[in-house]
Image (cartoon, rainbow, N blue to C red; front, side, top):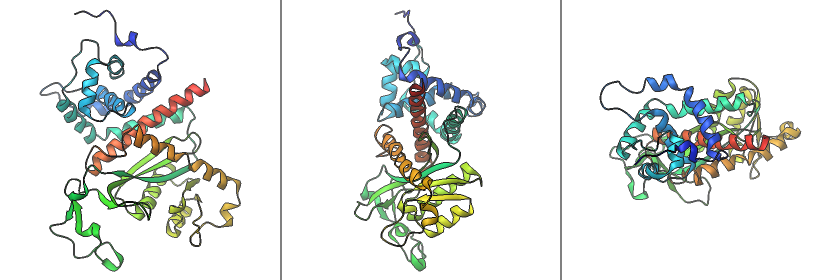
Amino acid sequence: MFSYLSPEELVPQDHPLRAVRQMSDQALKDLTRRFAGLYSGLGRRSVPPEKLLRALLLQVLYSIRSERLLVEQLRYNFLFRWFVGLSMEEEVWDASVFSKNRERLLAGDIAQAFFDAVGWQARQGDLLSDEHFTVDGTLLEAWASKKSYQKKDEPPEQGSGSRGGLLLRDTHESKSDPDAQMYRKSRGGEFKLCHMAHVLMENRHGLAVAGRVTTPLPQSEWEAALEMVREVRGGRGATLGADKAYDEAGFIAQLREMKITPHIAQYEGRRSNIDGRTTRHPGYGISLSKRKSIEQIFGWLKNTGLLRKLHHRGRALVQWTFTLALSAYNLVRMRTLAVAAA
């Protein structure tokens, strides 16, 4: 059978994916040298990394549950074939080959490089704020059951509790995903095996500028926030909005040492570490109103990006998946901003 039409001709000119494809192609172009070092010239021909990454973006954008279902749709969905860069007659890869080649992208830290390349485009388009940010964290339910959370064969003699006391996380671990921990974020919440994800958002247009996945601990939110702010600002002054969980004396003191003004919601159940010197300025109220926008990022990641219940195990792979999903969110958000400005 011969085809006289290409996927390019079948996709409408005003389809939302066209703008996303254009931005992702520019980001992939910036990663050409990095891609070249991932694959050996020996052995069987590998899946082109550009096509592999576009396919993984589709999986996030269209909430496809598994890579096997993604490969299946690539066989008959003309829109997907066009976005990935496959011709009408080109053979689609086997699901196992697809997964194996994804591991090479993980080894090359391609997700972070792609996220940075997309962020550079946003900066070139004057979409990012350099002075005003918001941070928050959320829980990602691990791909492991509570039954897998069992006592360690060799628990440590000294734990992470007060005065070296042994806590449950010191004596138990998940046999399915050792990096996951039993945790609940609120006092009335349910304990779940999970990872903790953190996002640093700029306040101008609500784009993510940094993301981390850590062990779910109370201090993890503060440590991740400091690390991301230090990476993005590099010692330059800025403001940082956050909810009352970040109203902690040590964290606020470190922010001030970094020349970061803490626009953090005041804790009502005890004496707050944020006083009138901060709250009297109009910018404080603006930061608190902008802070709610970060929930849109988490909502999109969990519902569209399917990160509410993870489909991967291990901190490294969860971090890779989370970073790629953040890139997909930024691409969608940038496309929306471009349409609104037109």
